Length: 463
Picture 1: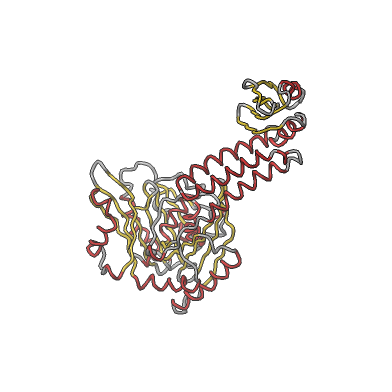
Picture 2: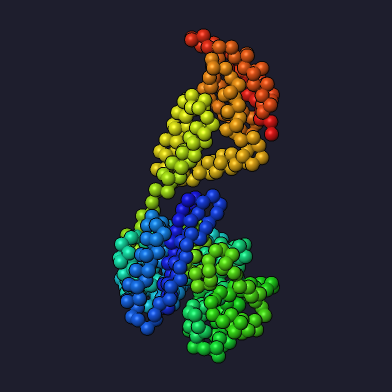
């Protein structure tokens, strides 16, 4: 995803985390971030209004109104179910789940929001494995106060468990791992919530949250909660990697965790991806949904309430590319300005590309092509004579009575097309340049009605 930006917002009992990301060619940058403490003694609705004001100030100061905005809520606010369904229901999966959802969760369908993700499709055994996420409307409606107070649309609402999976799929230390366990703690003190997750083939297969009241509870909670986790890897002879993330007393927790020798424990450093500490991880994982293809894409926000994707970024991108091309040519000097036909060709190409913005699939193909061309220009700028110098050399070598109609280049060399009083004289003039070699006619010289000779000449650039 090129030239995209995303804002991830995670709200918990005692804190608000915000991460703003921007993407460009093959890079994702943390543009800004913030971590706010909240008074957990205040009523939850009041804290939501405080969060809305903090988020509004962050958005205003960073000018992110046009970005995709993802809001995260705690794992313990939702119900997660791992379901197996016949493959035949795939075409009408949402309708099927809505019809049968009261058999999966003890809630009325009219009182919930839900979303799902297919995490495994087994055609051999004719079944689908589904991760179902359900939240009560009255829980999510409180978070809508933030949306309404901000006055801008949300792209999606998800949970911190899936945000952690997306974060680990991006982190340089863990991105290549497909099967692993992760444990994270919410709250700044030992004695809040422990969350356990199992990832198979980079998809969240199991998630559970438990409350612990103190250090004495840690050992018991780990022994109990890691027991079902181990069953996912019962047939795996290798040591399973476990990624632990917390801002609490790591040494105290790790001393209990290291007793379970079947796990290889690692602590991915959040500084490696540009965030200040582990409390920012959920917001980071949420923001990644805007700038990168992520494995988990749960969205609990009802479709009618979702912010429509903007195509503004595509128009800006093509406008910038067009300006870059035109500026590069005009920088060559006053003689290049006479090549109006070249500029007209570039303008026409830019208009053609802008029209293709209407088709997103076509845009992606065009972007890949432009990346290749820009990469080639970049290589030429680093390892060879700059293209603008070659164009300048050619225009200075040919006489005033000749002009170029077109100028093409690729890995094989340069081709020029145009008219001259005597095309045969051009060969010797171009061969005299120290930058050019192997100057030859690529086609027979023809004469136009105005008496001018039409030529097509090819040559190579000396490095």
